[in-house]
Length: 487
Image (tube, rainbow, N blue to C red; front, side):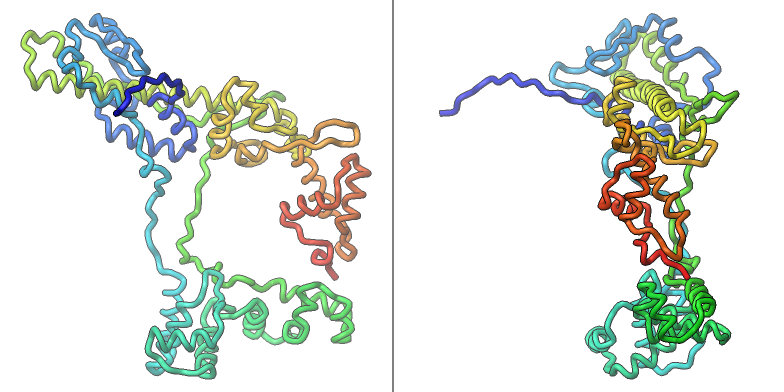
């Protein structure tokens, strides 16, 4: 026998307006503009620019309309309540749904015109060579195996098998290596190489022969392992040369391109154009913060729609079609008001959050010295402005600020803290900057090891362990001491 039970349950849910606000806050300026255009296209009651007449609120006040917020939804009451025309068991759909774009509408990218791909560019060059049918098929297959860096990473024997199974071309290793030489003659120099050593050698062999280039080729062919590990003493002994001769050969090698595929301009790589959401300037020694004007659009509710609602009120005969029309009008007006309110709240949230960050990092913004950055986490700003950490995170993760020292991502100003020898909290970014400066000023003939770097930072008042030095060095993309060594 079934039993019926009545349970009470408390739960927290975001209103449609709150969800809409959170989605708007996380959008950077360009995406925000696209969102506004989308909303204006979907809602005819929302218009851009200044409203020359009375405001939406004044119109309703003058016509004895009353605005109330009921359960997070703005309900417009007139002498005849529209809700009376709905049956008791029917709830307007606009009260049950949020006026937000759906999940599958998020993260849309602008379309880009398609150009010639890197592989197509290589295939076009093959047309200038005289090849028989099998050689053409092999060459096309090899070009199709070239990755974005310009390399063919596959074994020749595997390519032999694939040609037989997929292209019905039966060949051998010798013929493939013969055709591979043709592919390696294509531009850019170094394309079609199977490893870095071969890539560099292909490029050197295209250069005009000199003593330095001949030595560089010998170094790569005979002692590539010593060169890659910067065992310069072994190279000097092996080739019985002076340091000046070795330096000239290394300069020739360092001038080569290790990724020839990356130089092709037709790769259709998308370049992201950064639009700063804020601007910080220094005026008379004080910081001034401004919000990008594109984040504060002029929007208003269509007067045509409000006049239609006014006409419905003054009409004596209320037909079924008029009742349906006024329900539609109410839905669009509510949606327009919600959207405008959400934009105003977004502006305020962005400005308040960035203002708190600016004052927290005032010393940096006045000097531009990254060593002046203070330790700062999301909770620090959230506590200052009495907002949730998630809100601060939405502002920081996707927004940029234009400063006197360049455009920076806001989240870059956040960092953890460590104790110095005085027991004071210092930013990890400050320590990384000092580490970077120390490595930049070292004698490249005798680069500093991580142990020596740890001792130097300790002398400067930063007791950092060697393994922490290694971690920070890797985050700064700085190699170990042996690989920083120069002749």
